[in-house]
Length: 436
Image (cartoon, rainbow, N blue to C red):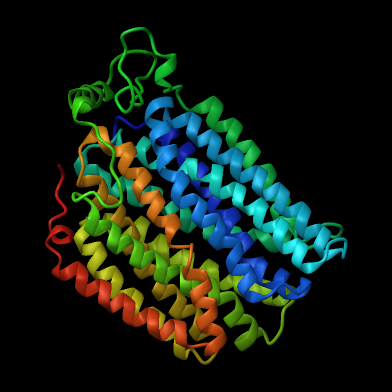
């Protein structure tokens, strides 16, 4: 449950904004290995598409986080959704042309990479805005649960994306159909956000009104409610606001943990589609896309079970989430290395996803709690930047290791999960995630 200062309908819209981007991205991940094999794009080429977008995301996210402080969270959510929709539309057009043979494979790859890069430029605006929107409207005691619930938008999206993607593979648009569909969905959600969220742009405030995070805390009907206390807190801290980078001493350990966990998940997840094609489906096709979708759905369901149930039921702290999440992810990742059939692979991936489903909210909430309310927008940008950085090199590394030996990226990642689990137990900053 969200805080009284955060109306349910507002949280639902922010949740929907992240949900649609997660669903679209996971639908893309589930069909792209099949598309690549069908068109003749090298496996490493598929990884490069995500790597370039993630590299741009890493540098653009902090900028958009600063803009969310200056221009409000709603506007930046709109920018992120619009960027996602435009990127998906251009990707769909390029892939459709490639499938029909109108573009050579390498030209298809190049144009697709550029279209996807637009998501890195503009799509990165939504995540820090969403996190800062929720963090600035919840108390420190409520924040871990609220941010975990917000993070579950990605889990739900990864269920819906692969689940609905096969229904959009239609005559005339073929495998590019899901991209066209999510373009339309993104447009609808953008309009809903525009109409449903309060205008928290400080430049629209009355003369003498506050700026940044303080103004982003809206009241209902113009009357002071529970949010005015949070606004007063933010105003009192406004003089202390400073840029929060990934190297900031207050959050450095969280960023190290988050980058390591995200990179391990990105490396193994990116190779999963090819593992299913080669080990289970024995060839690319619509059937392989469905199997990949089922695996992603199982992993997302496990993530949701953790984030909607276990975290809230047991009121787990960020340090507990980071410790036990890493260890659970290690078990699931090792299981992927040895899974003899599809059922075992799905179970192992579900365990891995449940582990990362604990670890990622733990690192996000811990970083948020390490700074004051005035710095929530900045720390959200740093977190989003780290999440993007995880996809710069890790997918290519994972697929490269996979081409050497299919089980290799999973054995190495399992060892890496154990290592960050030990780090979470031993690091003092990670063991003392208390509100500041």
